[in-house]
Length: 414
View (spheres, rainbow, N blue to C red):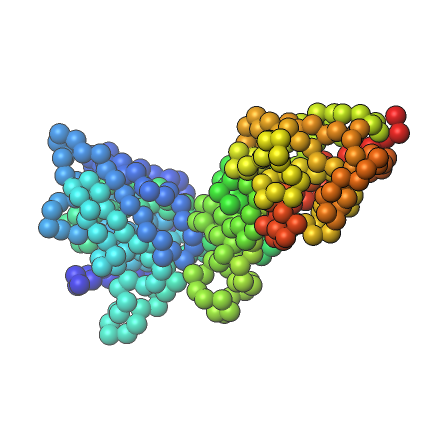
């Protein structure tokens, strides 16, 4: 390990303006893999500088650049390590050096480094350092802070040269405490509330997805402790992960307290996974027909192209293929299978299909699906239910679509 030579010093410099690097310094601009991160550091950043004819290899082979975080714009030379301080929500001091062991020269134009999560140097005057022991953290009443990442060719405060720089935003490390409600239809459109901490109120700064599908219309509360959003459509699934990205970094509902530690390690929020369920819901048009008529139904949902419908003349209502039934109350494969089947299914696309519901023929026995002679479907309120497996012994494999208002169907007297 390179011997640390940056002396610890205090500073009383106050931020009065955001200055720029000296005009005579040919400082390259660095692009970061992430221009923001969580208070407390520990995240890894890759920085890239564009090579020029005058400087084809900004990061010299055989050397390890010195990376510093400075509370104002980068100084022309490396600065002494300084305790982070703030007045209210405004930084007034702070310089951190990245441990050289955590800096990697990837190429002449790229470096990788870890944002400080503890003091460096670790030992000062034979004693453990007391400067910035928590690494790069928010101070005072800050909920976010602007820093600069400054890269030098050495750690010397007198002879080093600034190679490149980039702005960096520090934010509250986000956490998730609840998803309300914790389920919704595959059709999407469910408004949910996510509670927690560290959600940014800046425009488009907080994004989120469930099971890989983006949430839309995200509106963050003024205190940053919750947001409301609307689910998109996706295939049915349980135990789905909510992923949130903020300036303070990402958080997943599989580790809702966002500490990267096993469940029940000491933290302020519950760390048992918090998941979401997409239920197999459908919408039906039209939603009513007269007794003894025949009607074509347009059904909207998700995942129709993955289903197999038997359209042969020998098809039965109890085959192991997919079926669409007119059901009184909730579907049960063994005891309440429905009073009629919507047949001649045409799948237009993954989200749309059309079938024919014949209310003029004999209704089905809800237990066996056998035709009941001289007994058409009676008037009443039913539910159109899609099942993946029509066998009487299908059990959970039937995967019936959920009972919802969009699937309600009324057989009327006229």
